[in-house]
Picture 1 (cartoon, one colour):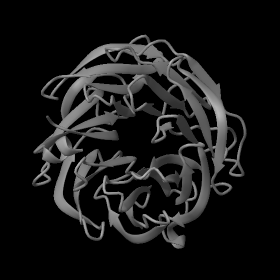
Picture 2 (picture 1 turned 60 degrees about the horizontal axis):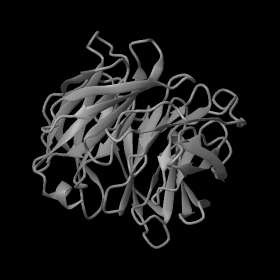
Picture 3 (picture 1 turned 180 degrees about the horizontal axis):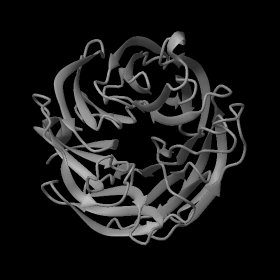
Length: 362
């Protein structure tokens, strides 16, 4: 964290959906000034078709993307980040073998990569080589079940993969079953074993989740219900107990087509942020670091359309919101006392931004 705080600038890596105006598909990059919040115009760093979600290797020297491979198969690609963080070099890619992935994550030691396949209802594991290359798939686990929302929960839909603070378990929110499936990780073999699960309210549709920096709490964003369920998390036992569910929008706004998309916690652990699509806003919450419960603070417009994703820089000072339909990324300053968001007036064009990763520059 010290190196991140000391940095003057950060690199913003941007994954994208299919571009609306024929732009080149790939991973884009921009530079964020950590002093002023200024961001420059994103430019193409590497070509790959529909690199929806990205994940950084813990050493900061590799970047992974899920997307369509040149063979036409859906897979995951590994890129080497240049020393100046201005370009990417393809290392290799591997097919998933069970449809396209909606999310990707790397364990904290850089030994294993995990993907979630929303459409086929599965998660997969891939060992990583010493140089960061993706090795052949070692595990594929299919979920089972459904939920009360017949339009969206007719089958299991794993929506993200999340490695726990002690690097022992992978937690997978499943939008289709209202469960968070928990798996033991065997980093030596790249295998996954079912361990247990947590539950969110019926019909809530869990999507993404984040752990509190203290490791004691986990927060699951429910896409369909537009809410956050807070859990007490036991990292030794790999168990979770729900303690609160709180709305991300007032009752009168919790209707179709509004859905929740992303959740983030800054390094301070004092606040939590979620994005609302349709309403096109960020909800701000304060975290009680003793109980883990949330208190609503405010709603802030993202100054764009359909915030599929957003992220916070490593210093916890700036929030970057990606408008998928508006083809924009807008910068907000975080009030370190209240957690409130102040729009900086800075918005740049970026084709169909789906995912933002922010990396401190050396």
